[in-house]
Length: 221
Image 1 (tube, rainbow, N blue to C red):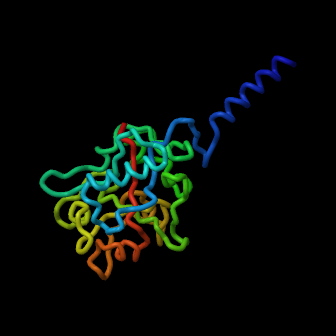
Image 2: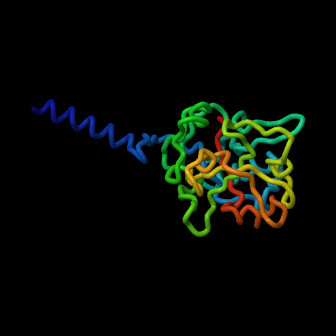
Image 3: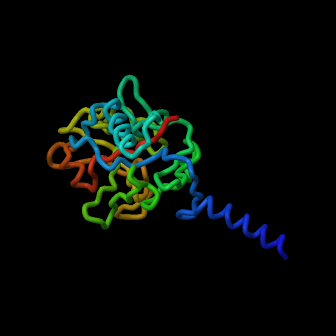
């Protein structure tokens, strides 16, 4: 009887150490993924990929997670396009609460664990979604559902993240919720292009469809 009790105690301690959050295991490892709590404040003008990465790095450092190669999940278009999925390393990616988002790029772009409850900011806070005021679930990506870049037929990256006026940026829904049950409405990275009366890439345009110019940030190593 004493042996069984000891065994049960060990199992309980192990389970408690792992923790459970939203059905996914929680680990003691440091954060390697977050939704930025702020953007550039200039709509789709992030200062290019370098400026976007700087936003991720600065916010990560403010949360005590410096020392990693932080990258914004963004694609670019043109003669030398960049795929968002190629910028973020091999995984796994863990949020501020220690919950695994995805183990690798294939899982991230397939059956990942991104929801409103797990797509947290670097502060561990939930991002406002559909039904909240203000809605901020439109996250800039400029990407197709598989994480690759668009062709040059139409601007989907606010002129490769340098325009705060005319253009458009493909966004995803961090809460996986939209006006209907379609795949784009539930897509974390490729829901719809930005639009608005000021040209499509201003801060006000991003706000008009439920965004704030926020980014997905990943530790690439």
